[in-house]
Length: 313
Image (cartoon, rainbow, N blue to C red):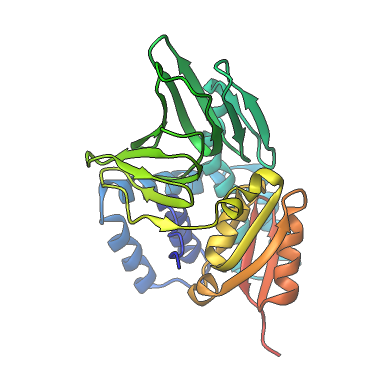
């Protein structure tokens, strides 16, 4: 069983700021944030970026309006911080939307699209995805900037078909495979034929039908996992299929189809196993079903969906 996907550094930085501005933070929370940001240069960069944006929010009319609304409606200092957090998450997401301006092909959040390439290959782009194509007389290169793409590659022995995603490359030795770039991690799944995955300077790894592997920058690909290829590419058919998947993974997958960010801080809930088949044309229905069948409470705010344990009793 796969592990719950960890929060990105941007999300972790925002999570720390939410605690610090909740109205209940003390010396312990401030010390924890300082220890967290000293872990690496990347941690410090994420912390500074979040702080700059948070401070800027205090001078916007939208932030002032949300603070007044929070005070009138909830009368909780923490809710004002959460509403500012929603604005902050929207700003943090803005640079990622710029990718679509220079990519050859891109999809908006909630959109899925089939792209026909010049060589006869076909690419299905999942929600919020972007890629560029560079074909020459000797190679067929594709760069996946973000999101997920399912490739059905036309045969051409004279021109290798290579997909670059993150810090690695995937070369088609067969016909049909999926590449999912989520933050710094890329995941490759094969549904037909064979592919070759290279990352972190290690020897290339071959994947066959029904196999999946993940890789991160600077390290070799992880252990090969077996899976049902039809379930893995269910998004192409407009479905999401989960079989005993941790709720943290389910929400991370659902988030790509929604304009809002989803925040779940409860670790017990993140590990809770979920099963079901859901329709991608109505992603909000998944949240409604979760709230009805699972011990969760869902709060919808501008640009943000909060998932918390349901109140007892």
